Image 1 (spheres, rainbow, N blue to C red):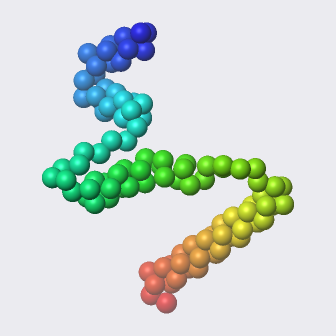
Image 2: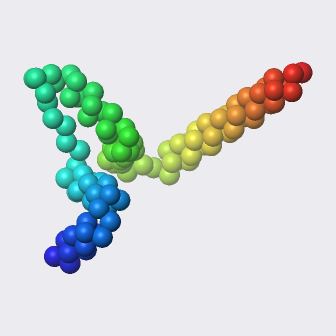
Length: 106
């Protein structure tokens, strides 16, 4: 009840800024909902997937552990993640060098 009173107080003090935060909190509480219009299920599924990607729920579901991971598997995954991170940093460094040369006209 107290949180409801706080939300109502926010609505009356700052209506423009508060509506966005209350709407976001309400959507997080309810979950993601999509309306199916004109029996177009494909469009609704596409919209649902886009909303899930933007909110980060898809990433949480994908990374959720459903079983125990052995320490050896954790080490392998950590090593792969580190290698991927290093490759990305190398690529970023190379692209930056190329762009600097291009800007300087070399």
